Length: 425
Image (cartoon, helix red, strand yellow):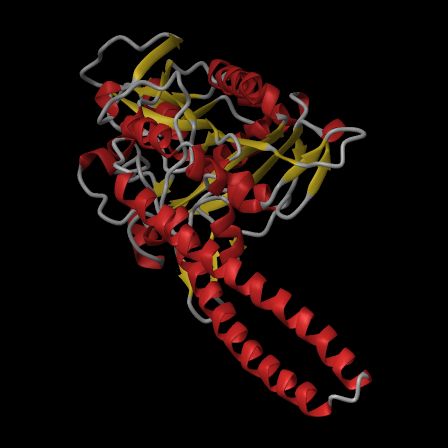
């Protein structure tokens, strides 16, 4: 959430910057400014009335002392009238504050100055690439055909149990899932991340704090009876650990990671590009989260990008790193890098990670602050997060790139975790 003071003082700047995200903020900012002026005017009237009440209270006491009880009673009646007016004004002020909040949360985060203008993924910037793309091979199959009839990843059984987008992993595929989770967590520990196991359901305050509400409500599964949401990513509960907290500057950076299942409705998704493991309603992911000092949050972003790059290198997957343009960025992000791995069976790139810096946007919603040593004032911290990594498309890449006849070779780094070096089909 953008600070109201920033909106008041730099509205033209905000309007121009949000054009990078193809978002026209003109009308919303106009309504924000108008609503805020009314709210401030109400507050001024309320304050004047409270001052009048204090003055009347002193006058009433003095009048009674002077024996002027009739005048004192008249003054008391006047206070009743002012109190009733004040009560009505306070109710109007509360309504105005709620309206103002509803408007402010509609504004996306400002993109960093390095973010390029653009309308879609076609305008994203390639930063670098690595690994070796397998040679074209007419015998190479997409993972859904490769595994057909093996039961290793059973999409039809998932439909029977739940519905489309909820596959069942069995035998070596189930062990590969567990191996990847443990591998990612172990690598995170080596990189200095603290492991946490959070709830996989959150309340509305948590979903609001990281920006899922109200922007992505349609993409979340909700328990109506309890008012709880299944998490779309561990970013939500982990970042909310610090909601309403004041950290010391010495505690920063905070580096957490968590493995969780993730749930996304993915409404409106269809077509061959979402077939098989390419897009699921439930999937496993290890998430990394950082809380940083504003002075070095972009150094933290570079560190996280390098860390995710190390994971795909260890898995021997061909990859590329892309900085998203404004039109392809998320609502809450100031800068995002996407990682894509090449899936040779589909002959296409699959996104496996997004690593983002939200600057103070989430922290403002969360009231996540820090204090420098010896300073009474607090500042908003910066928050960052990234997938390290999401499993489905990593598995798709491993299966499709490592086909050798009727076998799938497992990267060496996973052998201690899987207990096998190949999957026989």
